[in-house]
Image 1 (cartoon, rainbow, N blue to C red):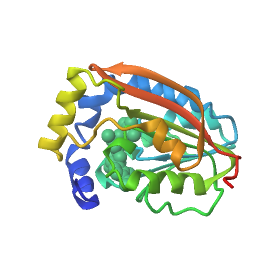
Image 2 (cartoon, protein in one colour):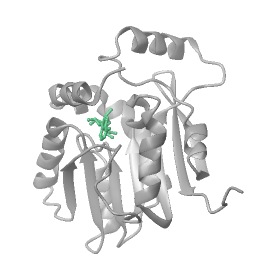
Image 3 (cartoon, helix red, strand yellow):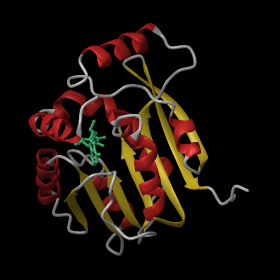
Length: 218
Ligand SMILES: C[S@@+](CC[C@H](N)C(=O)[O-])C[C@H]1O[C@@H](n2cnc3c(N)ncnc32)[C@H](O)[C@@H]1O
């Protein structure tokens, strides 16, 4: 598994090429995830792992001038590309912040909605619940989580098996792998409100909208 410095360094190096390499393939799932999150005028929204900021203008137009969007990412390089885009579009109610999803630098209950696309599945398995718990902590009561991520199929096809093999063989280059998204989100106390699967290069991408569960365990 890669550590955070290595992840940061990898994405700093990749930042100028990222949109070229993955832009068109990831866009449909990212856009569907944003649709499912259904962000409203005036809401406060956080994107964890915002990367080159592809979702930030969309979120900005959803929240309007009375809302606020924050894009947080480990990599200064990826954030640099995001900031250039925001500046060109003259979007002023979006802020980019360098930080780690494991320790979100916000008080409890700060956001109405949180979005994550193609980020959760590159974290070490032990960190995924911790990041999801951080998301739960900074969501207000009734807040929503939206995720787009590679997901495991019950019976993996040859493409998924090849991809997982490549991930184990070249973890720095192929840093993601399919995860049991619905299980992981459920285990930290979110309730699925919507789930959909799409295909990307033969791999399954899960798009999920969830809310912190209101049921208290006995
Ligand atoms: C595959 S990119 C996806 C970027 C963006 N969400 C998109 O859909 O284009 C993953 C991003 O997550 C960021 N990332 C990885 N680990 C992170 C962490 N622990 N906290 C915050 N960002 C992280 C990386 O720097 C990178 O920009």
